[in-house]
Length: 66
Image (cartoon, rainbow, N blue to C red):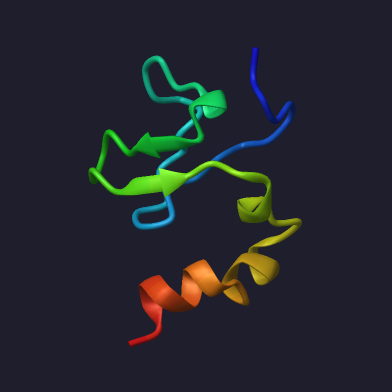
């Protein structure tokens, strides 16, 4: 059973859908993306209502604003 019901998780680095990856479980709190190897945090503060909200997030700025 998922910790966050009805949440689709995407890799912060490459955008891959984490929910579709083998043995994905958000209750672990972290997940290494099978596509790029990035360590994603799976916590409530990382859930966004929209793509726009994600792009305004601290995580997005840390990864992409250089």
